[in-house]
Length: 408
Image 1 (tube, helix red, strand yellow):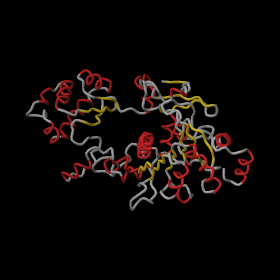
Image 2 (cartoon, helix red, strand yellow):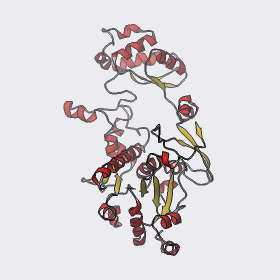
Image 3 (tube, one colour):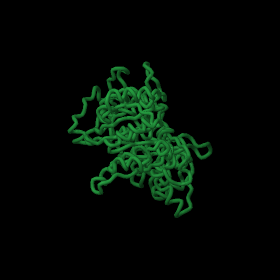
Image 4 (cartoon, one colour):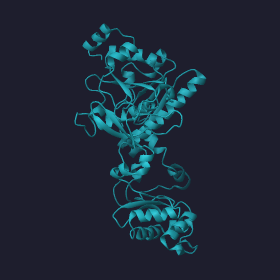
């Protein structure tokens, strides 16, 4: 696992020269901007004076009062404080917009317009500007004005209904923040696509992403299966629609493994590993349809086998038979896993104030222009004077006046 990562040289950064204003709160917008920062873009985080991003007070706290979530998900950024509700604060943002390639916001639709900072205003100042807008339901439609959070995005997008067992209430699908991360990811891709289009067309545009859309987009055949066959998928616990065995199975040492057999050949190899090759005969469960029709029986047979062995032995036998199988890891096991270590999936960042903080490393890996983590989330307003003087061109007396008026 990587410790003390070196700063990426500017000419090796994939997005060096790209300038981003992060006006977001909580997770989806800031995460989108963080992806740009990881690959070398200059990202300025714009926060409310005195309070900052609400994410600063969310999640596990450090001994120094910092938020681990904020520190991790706002890496590599500079922080300035601007009161966008104040006319002078909004005026300063307009100056910064002249510098920016991208501005990211995830307020309720209409909020930026209420502050006189809608896309029509900002694009008139900088026609090349790409404006990323993430919201619960998107910028259009009858529900556009409704507030949304990750949990609501998971629910409205169709994922939460599928999470859990058929005879029990729906559960949180892994994390309530999944919709935030997914929408931030789609927004970042959209912004890169918009920059590429700008190179050809000579103008910026709006990237509009809804939390629920990012979830709905990854639900495989849910939409076409309903449209063509009227199929309404229900909760299946750890099972997977269409394929069996494709689930989580217990082991003798009170652990779990995930086994995925997506075709007849894989199932045949599994039965060899189990020592029961007769299960793969055509008159038993050798065909896809037969296994689907006898889902409970097939899963029970696999579970009986895995329960007779320790997890490591189940994985070993599956590996030998070339059957996809892996452990259900908890975070402590992830920290000890040699694959995570070899891929440097956890970065240990030394911070002067917080000490060493372990954070997920940059994804994806680029062979020639890799991303990197230079700093954790910044202190509130740490770069206000430098940014307002160096980027917005304000003189010290102007900055002092704005601070006195509560605009910064």
